Length: 112
Image (tube, rainbow, N blue to C red):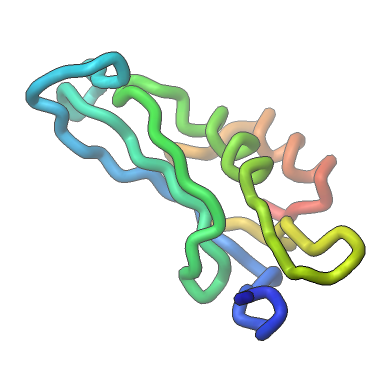
């Protein structure tokens, strides 16, 4: 397990979204500013190891996905007790920036 081997870097992490075109359609495919498609959101640790991921319509709200990604982190260690599951600092581009998000992260002890 990655946590037991010390492979997860909890000091810092990053969140970003990538646009994927959706030519055919489907329930989640919507028109965003880049066109018709979806956004793939990912939270990684400081070394680039994926911690959680999700998708939203292309017109989705990126800052709203940060809390969702943080809550989706599930670490299995096989040891008793609650394992670490939050990074101490988080980096993101301007698509994820908002005052409300900065305050929410601060309440969780995460430095934006």
